[in-house]
Length: 41
Image (cartoon, rainbow, N blue to C red; front, side):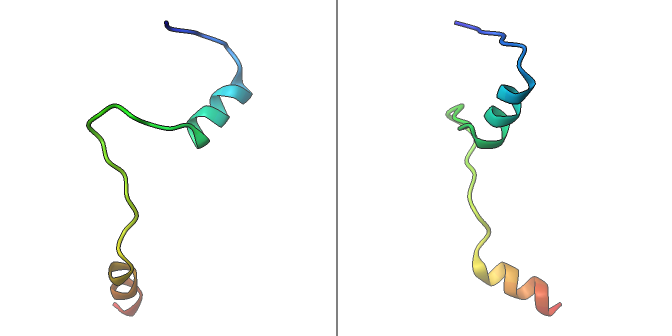
């Protein structure tokens, strides 16, 4: 069911801390070696 709450505060919290699970996209952190290489360049 689609819900439209019209609440800015709720939208900000949902976008910032909510989970994204569409079955396709995967999020991960960069490996530490990549960050070290970027600093020394």
